[in-house]
Amino acid sequence: MTNYFEKLKLLSTKAYAPYSNFHVSAICLLADGTEVKGVNIENAAYSVTICAERTCLAQVYTLGYQKKDIIKFFLYTDSNQQGSPCGTCRQFLWELLGHDVPIEIYNQKGDSYVTTMQDLLPYGFTKEDLE
Ligand code: THU
Image (cartoon, rainbow, N blue to C red; front, side, top):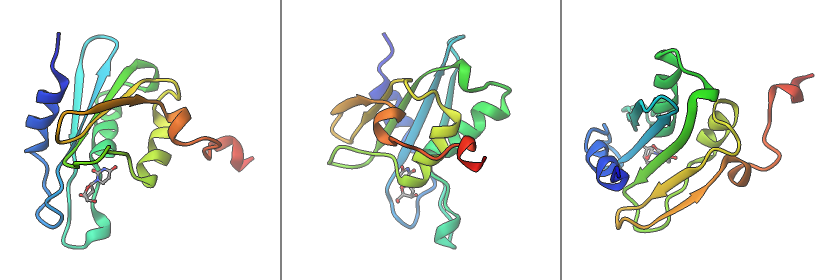
């Protein structure tokens, strides 16, 4: 069985985080077995930074996959606490990841919990709200 904690920890070393030194990694597991990866990429203009969740999902779509192809989302943060996606990523994921797809989140110690977008962003904003 795949050890996603070790995989994510190794992947997090690829993060470009010279300002926060906080490394984050994400892996999307697709129905065909493909694993699509992402890390956080920071910038001297801090607000330009892209979180790992968004680099990962952007890559999923770039490769021609879509929401329906994603069966699980894994996340790792350098935190000692229970890690959690930021608000911007929650909104991004709300649109591009199935609301019941399991999201398994690991911290630095290897502790993990499983959640879903339904739990992370109840009453999330969607395109229907634009009507
Ligand atoms: N970060 C993520 O990659 N994902 C999140 O959900 C929270 C924050 C990154 C952004 C920045 O590079 C660093 O963590 C500190 O905020």
